[in-house]
Length: 307
Image (cartoon, rainbow, N blue to C red):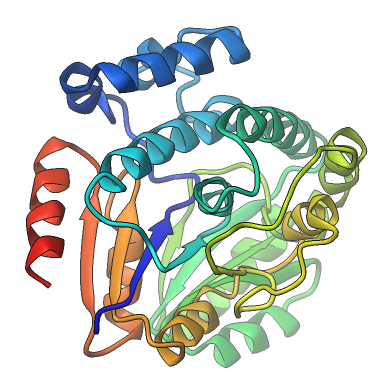
């Protein structure tokens, strides 16, 4: 029997024009974007569909990704319901929303606070992030430990892909140390060290704004970046979301936990194919699908109907 998990990608996957064909094809999505525009105070459809100098800024990238992921969830759920949910970094908000932990409007409010505090932290304590490929997590961790200054492994994406983050100089030095050991290095297009101690101020400011939000436990099993496994206790969800900002993303462990629990079909919802690639590099004997536009939606529906 097949067991389906919906996965949601993080910030950085977005691209101008994402979701436009779906918006034009489904009137219900226009209403979703109009609701978001009213809540956020700007035209979210126009911002999503057209390139602009600030398109990739955290203030816009986070809610725009969330809106598309919510739209894709609603469309795919017309055909199939997930048995489990997981997200990568920002993607956890779409996963929690899909599970009913909070409404679409509440999710936008949460992300407005989150993005604003993260943007401010990036300006006050700028940093850098690098993807390190072809080394084990242990090798990457050792390189960070051997580098003077603050730099840590923060995203455990696959057995041979780990992201490091920290102060700009130390992060670059650790990346070069990894490169000398045979790694391939890719700088990320960010000016902050997400999921590191440099986000501590953002985490506390975010928590002060959202600690009284009426959040609830999702009704669908949710797998956590912070623990790398199925999350059982949702009694302090605002505090969890605070800690999530400064905790490593243990995505490799998360995927292993999902497979151990019987999940064998993984569907990425959101722009790009990042998570599909990570699943394929991490797990064997699973079905991997992605939904980001009208053609991939139709393809996924057909594939899921045949399982």
